Image (cartoon, rainbow, N blue to C red):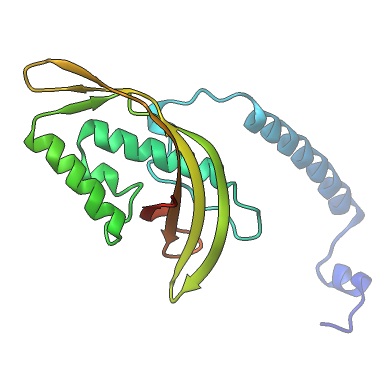
Length: 195
């Protein structure tokens, strides 16, 4: 088959000029449909809560990862888990085998035990810098230096009394993220103060 020319293969397959012309028309029509499809894909999309991913998407290793965006999503997922006092939701942002999960779940359990609800929890990222990235066995780790500020937030106790917690000034952290494969989402493994 390798030594045959295109003409020989075309003759064997009984390709006629009519079929070739029809193929060109189909190629043009397919190209037009693809253009329309791409245009529809690029049109503005209304995001609903159900269309937002429940975990942080992984990014192909062939592209530069935007760590700022990854940390923002993780912060948002973590804040929501704390506000909802939901340990299963916390696992979307924080790996359950890591040391950060023990600390974060202790916070959530304390809120549940004291019947306190947290509202308007928000961290403002000022900078995110990659320090190193490595594979250990099947897991990939990235160590980030993160500078953030926490705005004031509210705590409400079981009686309905509302308290405002003062904001925290900027602070630097070492944030270690982990994923278990190149397709897996990034999650927080550990957090330590860089000061």
